[in-house]
Length: 479
Image (cartoon, rainbow, N blue to C red; front, side):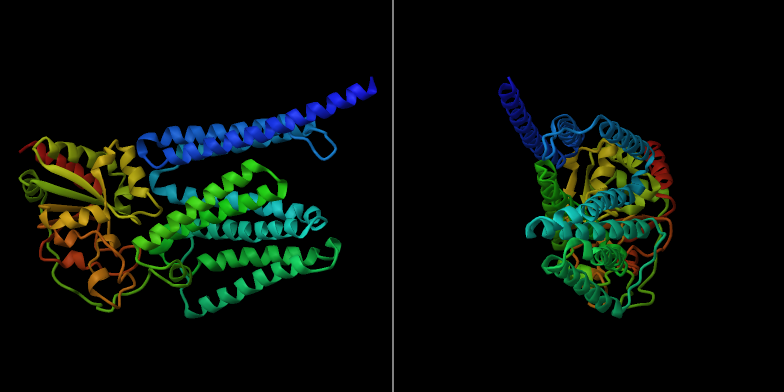
C-alpha cells in the first residue's frame, strides 16, 4: 500500500509538472500572437487581450501546479498573499490607465519600464544567497539581473521625470567620462562577485555596493541624454526591462518569464535600432551624446515670419487637390486629433486627397502619433511613413504642420552646426504651400530654431491647435 501511494504521488507530480511546462509554452505562444497583433492599430486591442490571456494562464497554473524541490505546492497563506498583491496591482493599473491622458502616455510607459526593472532587480537581490550556493551560471544571471534591472528602474524614473518636465538635462562634456567610469566600476564589481572564491556570507557588502552603483549609473546614464533622443531612450529602457525579466526567469527556471523577457528585450532592441536608423545616428552616439538642447550654428533671426488668416487658410485648403497633415507632440498636447480627423473628412468631401505624414520619432515615444490618430479613428492606410511620403512632397499643394517641429526642420539638411544635422526629416519645405499651427514661436524639443518658420512658402496660424482647427472647420463649412 505504501509503495502504491508513493508511485501515485510521483506520477501525480510528474503530470502536474508537465502540465505546468505545457502551460508556459502556450503562454509564450499567446505572447507572440499578441505581439504580432500590436503591429497594427486595428488588431492592437485584441493583441493586448491575447497577451493578457497568456500572462493570466502562466500565473494561474503556477499558483495551482508549482512544486518546490520537496514536491510541496504553494501554501494557502502564500496564495492569498499572491492574489492580494495581484488584486492591488490590477486595481492601481486599471485606475492609472483609465485616467492617463494621451499626452502623458510616454510618462506612463516609462513608469511601466521602471516597475518591470524594479521587480527583476528585487528578485536578483533577494535570490543572490541561494544563487551563490549554486553553480557559476546561477551567479552570472543573478548579477546580470541585478545590474540590468537596477539600470532600467532608476533610468526609467529619470526618463519619466524628464518627459514630465520635473527633471532637467545635465549635458556637460565631463558627464561622458563619469558615465564611462561608473559603467566600468559596475561591471567590474559584477565580474568580481562572479569570480570571487569567498562564500556568500562574506559578499553581502559587494552585492549591495553593486546594487547602489547600478542605480546611480541608471540615473547618470539618462541624465545627459537630450529631449529629442527620448523616444530612443524609452525603447532602449524597455529592452533592458525585458532582458532583466529574462534573467529573473533563469533564476527561477521559469520558462514563461524567460520567453516573455526575451520577446520584450528583442522587440525593444529592434525598435531602438530602427529609430536610431531613422535619426541617422548610432546607438552609441545617442547614449554618450547630448542630442537636444543645442543651438544652431547659424543663430539669430533667419527671415520674416508671415501669418495667415482663417479665411485665407480655408480657401487655400478647399481649393487644393493634395494635402498632407504632419502631426507632432503639439497635436497631442492640444488633444486635437479628433477635430483634425473631422477636418480631413470635410476636405475629402470636397474631393481633396488627404494623407498624414508620420515621422518615426514624432512625439515622445515610438508610435506616439499612430496611437493618437488611431484613437480618433483615422484609417491606418492614411498614415504614411516618412520614407514613403517624402518623394511625393513636391506635388503636395499644402503641408499642414500641427505641433511638429524638429521632424520638419530643414536645418537637418542645411546646418552642419545643428544638433539635428543628418537626421532624416519629413520634407515639408518641398510642398507648394506650408501652414504651421503653433501656439507661438517656441523651439522644439531639440531646443533649436526651426528654419521652416522663415520659408517663403510658410504661413503661420498661431493659437491652440484644437481651437484653430475647429475655427478652420467652421470657416470651410460656411464656404
